[in-house]
Length: 338
Ligand SMILES: *Cc1c(COP(=O)(O)O)cnc(C)c1O
Image 1 (cartoon, rainbow, N blue to C red):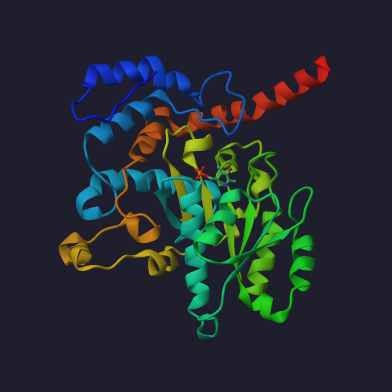
Image 2: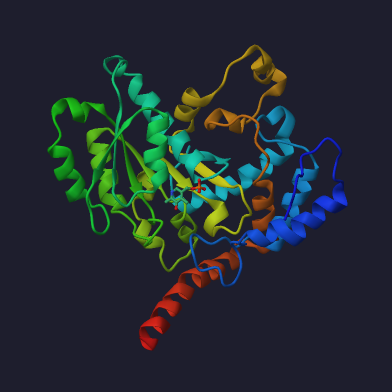
């Protein structure tokens, strides 16, 4: 139907757009379609989409303050708000990423590097504990950093007790290899939130990094109705939240927040002769690329900053509650027709 598109003679803009409209886009499913009931939905606001267009057309990026200050300033304003939702105390801060997978990877690299700073762990393979309900990206990213993963069995939320029992059954050598425990703030399938408060206390007692993957569920932190279910998230060492899921941002927009951003900087800041200039006195500023795995990155979240300025924070509780009440309504309607 499409035929050859990459040819020696160009097909031209009009033909390309025609192909997109008539063939290619028809073979996709818009995730914000009202009848899209599968997978994690998206609901980008019109203002956010428009501004996405503006930032793309401006050819700016948000790796370094020297080049991207205006955009990064706006990202940071949005980030302040996101951090305030978690309740994490100062100096907690974060950066935007291409998604939840990149955020999870950035967080577990930071955790592993911190653990490796202890000389006895230098040649050790790290071990990460999470539950069977954890998102596939945790296991996939553990592979990327060559860490082992152990899964706590749990029908429902992972509790402090279940985690304690599991950890207690490990050998001392295994226990010493544990560099992070990952709790989930809303599992992808069922929205189950682990016992974040209990797991946080466990991690504090055992001096283990606590990461909360709230990629999907994190949006619900803005809803007064369900905020209490996330109690304990404020004690995490790092948190993943995806604005492109339940925070009305277009793709690609994830976020990682650290209790102590300096630890992330130690793990992620890149060095190279071509990057030296960004450390010059005159280039002083906040460089998002120091806190996650990616260097050049679109100012994706400029649009997100724009979104909440535009919408007004006061009005934000409504949309989340709507997202929360709608499936509840659907569930009870289905039960009635059964
Ligand atoms: C969606 C999701 C991810 C992965 O996020 P991407 O943005 O798709 O990379 C990670 N964790 C959880 C809990 C998720 O729901």
